[in-house]
Image (cartoon, rainbow, N blue to C red; front, side, top):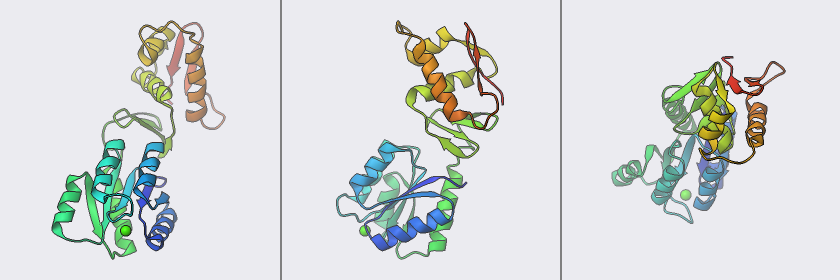
Length: 226
Ligand code: CA
């Protein structure tokens, strides 16, 4: 679907730029970087759906980088771009965590078709997710979406949403939320909870309708089935 994030790791500016333009034109959010260091920084900063990884980079061994990207973001699908089409490179690349490879020179239409196929395969709507209405979360990958748009949640916001979703439609007491999301020996202010609920509402409530999270005064909160 549109809006998925594709990271292009490619030191050839002609290929990097044209791929970025083509992917953006198809509705993906594309980021182009030209070194291994930038690639790792990009993956650490923001979850990525798919990485197009050139094996021949100036500052990194492409296969090592593939492993590092896979370790940093196991949910990211890595597709190798390589001028080397020897079978061994491909086998080692797939061993290093890549799921597909495309040899250069490639046709743009073919590359876009392969990207689309890989993203369909890794569609989080297929497995491991829980949903209420148009809100969906993947606990394994720690990601959340409204419709197909990913929501950028801080760790405690994600934990809070995940905990509320476990008892969707039911009240979850403040004590339970503090114990499950923070720490079972929490002695601090429960203002922290209200602060995080407010932050979460700003991210998951859209438009001017009622909040997805209802405050139950003196009791706790309830995630609504809407
Ligand atoms: Ca290269």
